[in-house]
Length: 164
Length: 164
DNA sequence: TACTACTTTTAGAACGTTTTGAACGATTAT
DNA sequence: ATAATCGTTCAAAACGTTCTAAAAGTAGTA
Picture 1 (spheres, chains in turn blue, purple, brown, yellow):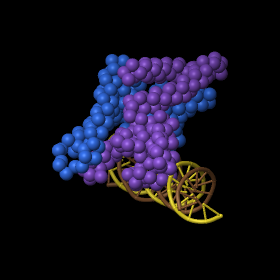
Picture 2: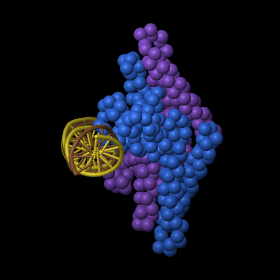
Picture 3: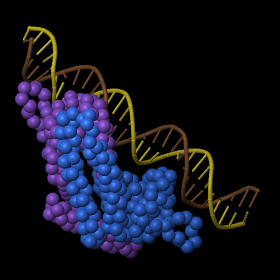
Picture 4: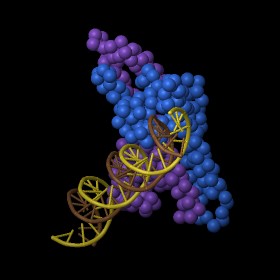
């Protein structure tokens, strides 16, 4: 391949990797997607290995992860026994789905935690000292703020849907 | 402290840690903030060490990070030589500032990368084969989509500002 | 059945990141 | 002056995560 094109592509791949990494996604998976995203034809596992200079095992595992995300799908190439993969070009959709999933899951976990917290501090317990009762009040008030934040996240998700 | 209250608090701290961790933020820093957020009075470094059972050095370094984020500020307690810290209770503000910062920084980096990519593929180079020219076209079109994504992120930031 | 071409699994190596704890300097109390 | 109290720093250790390479597995083909 033209080496200028290849260098440019490398920069892209590296950059996307960093980007996703800094948002808590697996760097390599993002790079895998980037390679496929820039390709004008489906690539085989071997071609990806060659392009990224990593082990086959690594690609194999992480390609499957991308398939789960609906970010990549395998295509059949006539006359070849290999599996070929191509990127889902709807980047927006892929990302949004991923983000929404992450947010929803975390919000759920947080809700559960907050609920059980509330249960504890609401139980009237005559053994509590005044100090403790005051503390419980503080908790209650601060938790309320976190819940507001949660509903903000929900609103954001709704808006995001409209945007895409 | 009432052990039920303490257990509840521990769950909260753990949960917030996981939450932030899964979004690419440092888990411990988040836990540090959680401790201060739930406290009804400023805490000293020693008290935090005691509460979280971690080393002094660790708390020292990461408290400073939180101060940089405006998530925590130190307060002077009369009659004590120690530094005391209290959380900025405006969680929404803290988070939004952090998120906006992260997004803006990453968007900038991505723009730079895309620009240089575009420069390379736009230079008319007579040595390119038809194959390469076709590839360059593909790149151009796919990059455009990434840029749309970027502008989506900008819009999201604007909306976020209105929400808070 | 054996052969070939491929993918997946796996145990451990390599890696980056986080945490520790001892040493240090600076400040205040005795 | 000396001791005690604090916060900070930094090299080394601990840790979790990702990656590799080789073995095992699967499916087509003769």
